[in-house]
Structures are given as C-alpha cells and as structure tokens.
Length: 194
Image 1 (cartoon, rainbow, N blue to C red):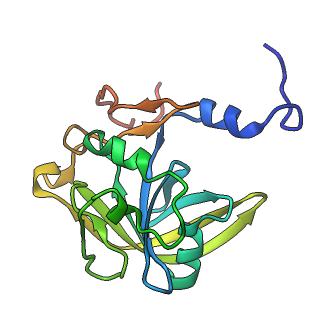
Image 2: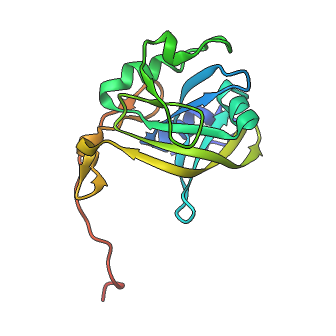
C-alpha cells in the first residue's frame, strides 16, 4: 500500500472516495435580492446536539455561501432516492440570477421561521440560522443552528424519522451515489465488555 501525500495527488478525489457514504445537504437559500438558490452539498454533518447545529462545507465561493453570509438563513431538505435526478441537476453551474428550483420545476413550500423555502417533495427538512463560519483553505465550513424541524407524518415510526421511509441518497467517490443502506440494529453497550 503506497503512502500518498496531499501535495502528490489532488486530495479532493481521495477524500471523497474514502470518506463514504456522505449524506447530502440539499441547501435552499435566498439572496439579498430575493433570488432563490438550491444546491447539494455532500460535506454535511451534525455538529452539536444542544443547541442543534448542523454543518456543511462550501468548496469554493458558491452562491449558497454568498446567500448564507448575506442573509444568515438556509434550509436543508433531505435528498431522497425519488429525487436524486433533481438533486444532481441542481448541482449544475446555473447563473446567479437563476433559481434552480424554478428552473427544474421543483415545487417549494414556505418555511415557518426562515425565508428560504423547503423542497415540497422532500419528506424532511431543517430550518437553520447561521451560527458561524470558518475559512479552511479553499473551503468554508458553515455552521447553522436548527430552529425548526419538518418531518412528514408518513416518514415517522414511533415519533422518529425512519430511514426506510426517508430513503436518503448519499454521495460516494467519483460520480457514484449510494442508495439507502442495508440497516441493522445494534444497541450501544451500557458498560465496557468484561
């Protein structure tokens, strides 16, 4: 197994092929001029439980980042198996004055506490207000405090979202995507094994 240093090969493709699967934040924003933007970001995770904070990374200075910095708000809709074609299409380099949701014929629905809308067909979404950003080389880490959760009743089992009902897709390496994974249950141990 050869040792590869980041200065010997583009680390982006190695990272995105090793750190898999990656959930997709389908981020909706509105510019200061009122133009909508919808784009997928696969560097996405939970950053804090109390208060609830999620993170996504903008690789480069994209419209999503500009809008979040200008308005301090965004939503994240779950990118689902049924919507994967539209999720992918929304990653195309649209002009700044084009609303991807409108261009792709995606219905959106108003949020409750923030201006950016949610994707109507997505079974779950998060409404977020900007907590902070951190510049990291060619990228910007965006932290957003979740101020509201939306989950379709049909996606719930015992009051919680169920992966078999959400059917989220993920990004893998190169041009590969992942369908919802095979799931197994495993309780966390109450104490170290004897």
